[in-house]
Length: 83
Ligand code: HEC
Image: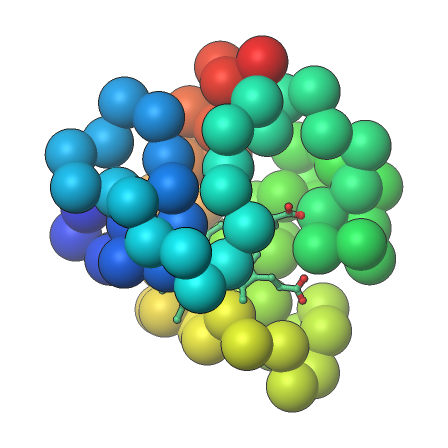
């Protein structure tokens, strides 16, 4: 997550210098019902969002960051530990 720069836009517990305020804080993400107000929060949808947010919500302020499928899976797994 540090490598992709997620923390420049999001506050993410447990990640160094992840204190961005552009996007919503990802605190307690595992307890959230929806992703970006668009998708039901489950593992498949979260990986899809992380890898390709512009496909989910064209024009969203979150850019496509070229996250690989494997990294998206690991990042999603981490976010679900935040509950
Ligand atoms: C340039 C700023 C920016 C970067 C970099 C960024 N995001 Fe986002 N992110 C956003 C914005 C803005 C939203 C809100 C999108 C919306 O609701 O349409 C968002 C939404 C999200 C959401 C849904 C949050 C919610 O409350 O529903 C998740 C999860 C997420 N981002 C994860 C990540 C991850 C993981 C990375 C790194 C791979 C990342 N973001 C990088 C700006 C960014």
